[in-house]
Amino acid sequence: KQKHMGTTRAGKPFMNLVLADRTGDMEAKVWDRAEQLSGLFREGEIIYMEGRAGSYRGQVQITVTDIRAPEAGIDPVLFLETCPRDASEMITALKKVLRHVDNPHLKALNDRFLADKDFMSRFKAAPAAKNFHHGYLGGLLEHTLSVCELALQVSRHYPELDGALLVTAAFLHDIGKVREFKYDMQIDYTDEGRLLGHLVLGAAMVEEKLARLPDFPRELALRVNHMILSHHGEYE
Image (cartoon, rainbow, N blue to C red; front, side):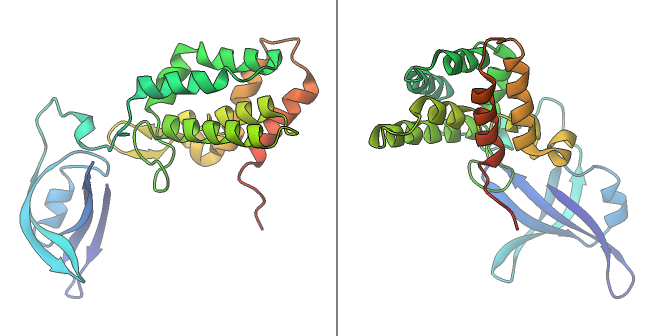
């Protein structure tokens, strides 16, 4: 997960590592043959490691004695935590919530995304974060469903709100994360994720769908994009 070279006070190179699988991570040190072993792998790659477990500042730390490249056919699920809930069941629950959107324009926008097979494939698999909430495969879908269900309840409790807009915004608020993150062997940011962020990416994705809905009211489009772009609040 992380790899950094350093030098001891005696001038000898060593390597700091953070090793991880889906159960968590731990720190490791390579004191001997650090430069040689470092050349065998890059950060983010899978390795076979041998070492001795010890304790440092109350945490388990591995002193690595050997590293080698793995054989082919490694299952990435071993290294990325996955949402415990079934993706198909969550999609069904999400579609059930979205059926409450009674504005025909907003329904058409939602349906554009639901019918986009490439988007839905990424939407079901993507994490919602790298280090914070729902930072695992399927986390984006789980988080979105939760927010949509909350939005529906809020709209029922406060009927003066535009419930259709609120639920639609809940569905679309984080869709940019399907492009913000990559998640092959570890969760990390894509280039466009680092440079633009999921708020801007999400608004751009909405505009792509709106281009095929020529009758969509412009004022309503502004409200949808505003809710996506502003949902993190203000920054000082």
